[in-house]
Image (cartoon, rainbow, N blue to C red; front, side, top):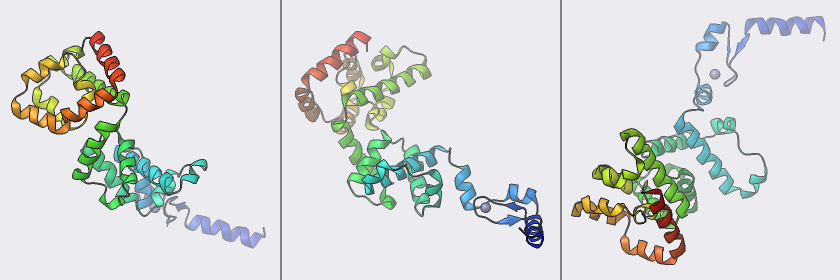
Length: 242
Ligand SMILES: [Zn+2]
């Protein structure tokens, strides 16, 4: 490099030495760069927020679904997500899922993709209820029972009561809400021996609400179709004391 060129490079560096890595804007003072805020930088800084993580995960699933062959390539990066025009829409969806306590996030995104619903229409309560009804009757029993036991364990920790006393001691209104939210599935509710006492404590109105989420006729058919599985779960729950 000639001396003139070297001097020129040096003088440019000295004039504008502090450049934002995200938007490439340059600043004379370092302190201005530190306090500087721009959309790409904000997106980068927010990457560990729950709604952003969910939005990013959904966006990755969306890309895998539209180009299945790219699964063999490296997954899309967070940087690519930040630069995407649908960043805002996916993060909004992530927030919606946090607020509405969406259950089994991956199944939910897969359901939306399978139904060819456009991202702008993903935050929709009616649609979510439809998904939840489908999920409860189609998911694997292990997933359903695992989710229910997780909910019961959380209840036991918060109330400092033994988890096996859940159906005797839980506040009925709270439990009905958890059933409506899909957190306690028919696989657990109808197979736990102590749930008989729970049903005795319910009012007719509460039983109607439960029936709406978990239609007993459909569940009876399900248990007949998966008789051995159902009996095995019943035995395990009985042994555990629930
Ligand atoms: Zn910037």
